[in-house]
Amino acid sequence: ARAKGAPPPGARPGGSRATRRLPRHSPVCVCMLVGLALAHSAGSGLRPMRLGRAAVSALASSYGGETAPTFDNEWEHEMAGAEKLAKHVPAWAAEIMLDEAAGAEYEAEQARARAEAHVLVEGREWGDGGGVGGDGGDGEAFGSGAFTPAEIGDDYGAPLEAVLAKLLDLGVPERDLRPERPLSEACTAAQVASLVHYLQGCDPIELREGLADESIGELASELGVPHEAVLELARRLKLRPLLGAATLLPRNELALLRNECVRGAR
Image (cartoon, rainbow, N blue to C red; front, side):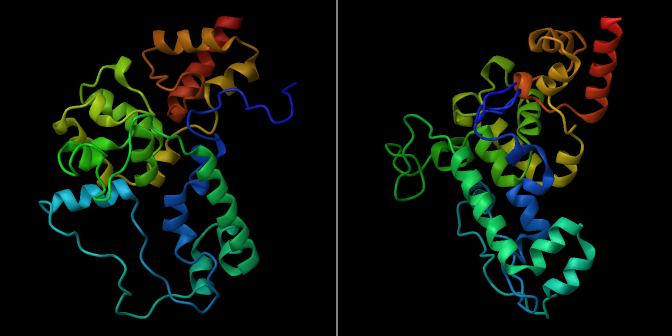
């Protein structure tokens, strides 16, 4: 039995597993489904989603360093109210949309989860201009390279596994894939740009829905098999347990891993 308050098997780096494994707990996915109407009354208007810091930095870079267009203006046409939108979202989201108290409680819960998940990067200090202290406010540190894979994934609503897998595809050695260190420590400027381009074109909900709900560590605990044995089997099957026991594999890959574990236990 796990001690009260102890992290669950396969707990993820940089925060609780619950804030990262399901689409409905992702702040960006909440923005896409219900965040635009959260804590608003049924008849209130909606505003476009606010972009995260890394996303804004990347967008500004795509405009050649010029000021990126603002997303804070109201749309010119009539906005759909919460009651109308509630018909097109899951029941849990509709409840939050239509109940102001539930919406406020949900926002507070997400704020607490994000605060607990935040990891300070040793040696990195943001300057007044948005760059890292000591770099003069320009150079690679001013752009997306100053952010960690975990921060980049959070900003774009993408699961950390997808970010790390893409970096691996771009040629970053697996030994250098460190979720809580700036990208610039492991990637070239071209690799960072390619990662940002990839994330800008992705559907974060689709990425998350493609992953299993159960981590490798949870699978191991369910089957009563040592975590390291399951991780070793995953590597032999040429899967990508990039976050160790905390990894959420694609659904088909976790099914394969489960079948192989069961077969080996017979």
